[in-house]
Length: 423
Image (cartoon, rainbow, N blue to C red; front, side):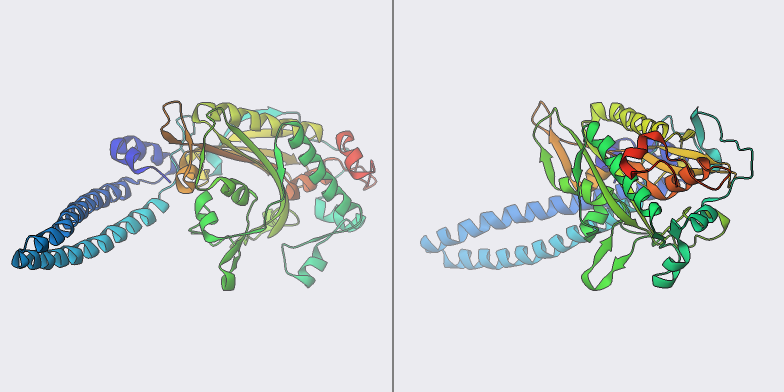
């Protein structure tokens, strides 16, 4: 959430920055400023009435002691009038506060200056490519055919038990899944991340804190009776550990990791691009989350990007890194780098990770602050990244490491985690 002070002092700059998303937010920002001015005016009026009321209350007893009953009763009447006015102003101030808050929830984060302008994924910028696209002396099969032949993933059984987008992993497919999770967690541990096993459901305040709520696209599963939400990523519970917190050590660098199943409705997704593991309603992911000092967040972003690169190289996967354009940027992100691997079987790039810096956007919602050298509180910066999401990694491993006989070779770095070198 953008800070109101920033909107008041740098509105034109924010409008220009937000245009990279392909939308003009000038009217919404003007509305915020107007509501804020009204809120400040009403708040000052209320405080003035409170002050006068407090003075009157102190004087009433003294007037009675001095035998000035008429003046005391007049003061009591005036005090009652002021209390009525103060109560009405309190409600008005609270209503204005709510209106401002809801309006701020509709305004996304401002893209950084290096984020390219654009309206869709076609405008994303390729900043790096590692390795060569896989080539085969035979016609490679897509992962859903390999999974069926090798009996590693059962999509039809998932449809029977739950519905489309909820596959069963079986035999060596299940072991591959478990091995990848352990591999990613072990690599995060080596990089200094503290591991958590967080809850899989969160309350509304947590969803608001990280920006998943209000859920404009209806992507979260909502447990209506208990008003809880199934997590779309462990970013939500992990980041919310520090909601309503003030970090007192200015030298802080908080690094968290967690494996969880993730749940997304993916409403409106259909077609060949979502076949097999390409898009699921439930999937496994190891997430990296960081809370950083604003002066060190850019360095942290570089470290997270490098971490994902190493994972993909150890898995012997060719990849490319994209800097997302404004129109493809997530609502809360100031800058995002996507990682994609190429599938020769599907003849398309598969997104396998997304690493983002949110600057103060989430921290403002979370009321996540630190005390600087001057002892004043400032907003922290937050970051998160997939390291990694499993469905498309499993798809890429199966498709890009397949052999002519239909078997799949396991990358050397992963063999100790899965207990075999081939499926």
